[in-house]
Amino acid sequence: MVSNDVPVYDSIAFKDMEFDASTQTYWHACPCGDMFVISADELRSGETIAHCNDCSLIIRVQLDGDAKRLLGMGDAIAVDPARGACDHEPLAVPVPT
Ligand SMILES: [Zn+2]
Image (tube, rainbow, N blue to C red; front, side, top):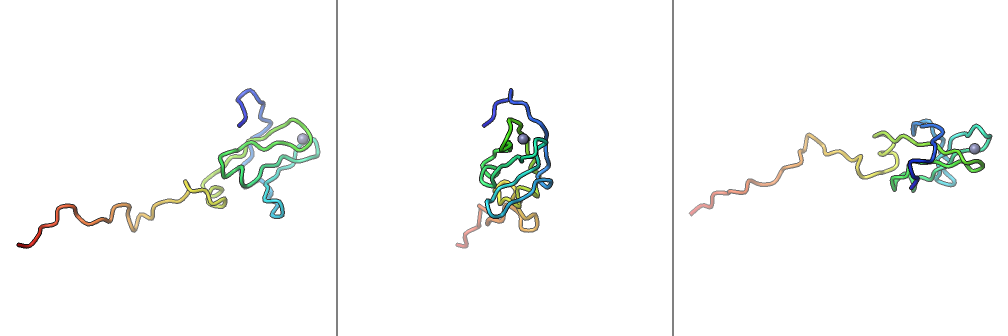
């Protein structure tokens, strides 16, 4: 985790990050000429800070619902309203005598 006193150079929307499938990392160009990188695993674990390979700058990646779905993150799974979350049998079932 990164403490609050580390200056964040910029906030970048997840959709503006580039994905490198060979390394499973997301990256974004840094003004120094290198790039900010963060792995898909780090994003899934809740990390949103991408570090530059070459300088001390960092950026914060903004994850929206689409990003979380793309990453397969659990909290993006919504309950299907058509099925409902409560389809159990009524508790008080009259027993025929
Ligand atoms: Zn840099």
